[in-house]
Figure (cartoon, chains in turn brown, green, blue):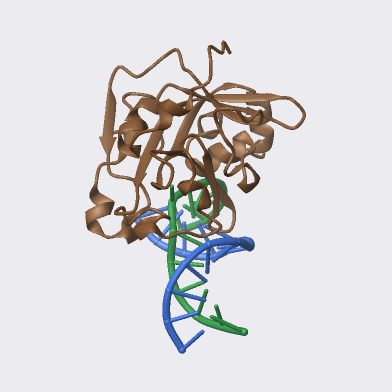
Length: 204
DNA sequence: GCACCGATCGCCT
DNA sequence: GGCGATCGGTGCT
């Protein structure tokens, strides 16, 4: 996988609904403790725009040890544990103190597929390796110990500038946020690489 | 202290 | 399409 450079802090210093579509095509890179490299191209994301966003962990400026990373500088990771068994990864953005974040919902595996298969338990088909926020965290070896890391410099996890980008980006409502109420559940803050076969859920 | 539930997934019918 | 798994976060008593 050719690696031009990492995305820098300036790239992340904007609203989540502005950054989210521009993350499509860039490459999430994970260096495992043994040095093995896992990488995948971002193909599906969701924007969370607290404090007003009632689907965000930081709604109404709610702040706790869990979501503290959301209040940090742009370019941090926010990884949380949910449903008693899954992790989800976000990219923190906007100005420090403004808790915007972009949830990574699916990536196209590029490097380290054999390792991803073993991290996922080996049974599922390849098309499901990194399709969905919980699956991609499992396949990339991501958990809460990788929350609050600086994606612009951390040797374990980062975002590399991509080389291929979507010709068209589709916009839909976010997934799994019905309990936030119709106003925020309906809002089209999910962005997908139009026509990509490995997107989770509705494609348009 | 305690009850409720989740930015999900995999397996069931 | 439906449901159980499984546990930490949250909010109420």
